[in-house]
Each structure stands twice: as structure tokens, then as C-alpha cells.
Image: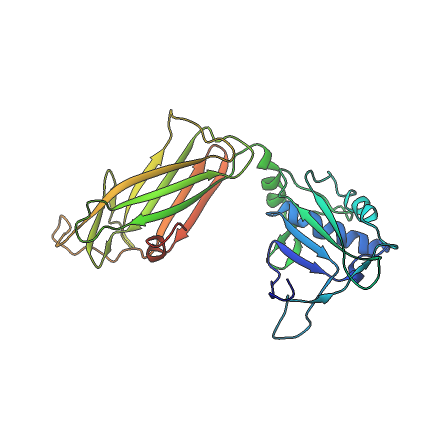
Length: 288
């Protein structure tokens, strides 16, 4: 990771050996950092790697700074992390001997995203945002606690544009239940640019939106009365579309300027609405 210059991000954090200590401040910091990952999207903390202090290379791993396992064993670290309430199920600590001395270790803490909110030793709730753990406000804590009672569904889109004949042009939506709760009902609303260089886009069973503001064409998908989406499972949805030239509004006016990207609203049972914006051009090249 040092050689490849793997930078810290929202799911990866490096900690020097001095981050582990018996002082209350150090113990609180350990539980803060670990619980913040569980409360966010999960991730990994590596104790025993020092970050670069260079202004032009922040958040890059600089060198091995091993933890003395004689002073701070894997079991000791596990006991400190175990003081997070409630305990984080599925958390794993790997001890890797690396360094000149037999007691030189790096501890890799893999933290899964949890189905509820976890409290640090200072009795506060934290979530990792970008490169730091910050305190959560009330609605964020409530939302995390709701993970265990609603599904978590994600969406990707792919646009197949068969120019110039449109015989196989279609949009495809791929939904995946990435949580642990079954989605009994789901619905997706997709809004695409109404026009591009090939003409005005008409989606089969779609709707033209010409109200005030940028125009669009939209289509909705739902499993109303159909099969649920089980945890870990995927479902494909698709609809054909075609381009038409010289299209006018009913009043004879020009079609207004349209949105530039693809906009997706996803609903699943009691899951908060997921709104995504995807680049139209990128969606023609790959799933995004």
C-alpha cells in the first residue's frame, strides 16, 4: 500500500503506533474511529502505518510504524473495541508481524457496516465522512437504527443506443438489494434527456415532461404484485426508446432545452428515497 500510494478515503484509514495507548483519550479515539465506520458504510483501519506529513501528499501512507505487541496485544485492542455499545457483529482484527523485532505488529481492523447505530466510549455517536469521524445529529442516528427494519437497494443504469435505426435502443436498470432485509415492493422513476443530437427521445410507455424548466422524458418501473427482491439478489428492468426528428410541441413551439444527465429516483418499502444522477454519455459505455 505504501509502494502503490493507496490514499486514505471514506472506507480506509491509517493510524500510527501512537494512536494506540492506555490513556482514556486514546481509548476513546479508538472506539470513536471504529464505531464511525460501522455507522457509515464500513471500512478498514490499519494501526501501524504512519501517514505522510508532506503538504503535497496528504493522507498517503509513508512508512511502517509498528505497534509493540508486547505492550498492546491483539486481545487488548479487541477488548477496547469491545467497549463500543452495542458490540459490532462481524468485526475482525488481523495481526501481522512486520518489522525488525518479533513484537513489531500491524493490526488490520475490518469493520462491517452495521444494522444499527453504535456508541463510542464518550457516549456519542460518530460517522466517518470523507477523511474524518464527526458527531452524528439526531436524525442521522435514527436513520442508521432503521437499517434493520428497511431494505437497502442500489441502482445502476446502462443505455444501449442503436443509431441510426433504433431497432435495439433501450435503457436498462439493474437493482441490487445490498442490505439484509427483503424488499417486498420497489419502484424506480427514470428521467432522461428529452433530446440529443439524434433527435427527440421517445421511451416506450414513457412520458414527455415539458413543464417549466428543463424538459425530460421519463418512465417508471415497479414490481407491484410481483416477486420481492431478496438480500443479495439482482433484478433487471428495461424499456425501449427511439429518436424522432422535427418534433414540435402541440402549440407549434420548439421543444425546450432538456436535462443533460439521467436522473433516477428509487423507492423500496420504508427505505428513504434514493436519488441518483448519472452521466448520459458514460451510461452508454458501461454500467454506472
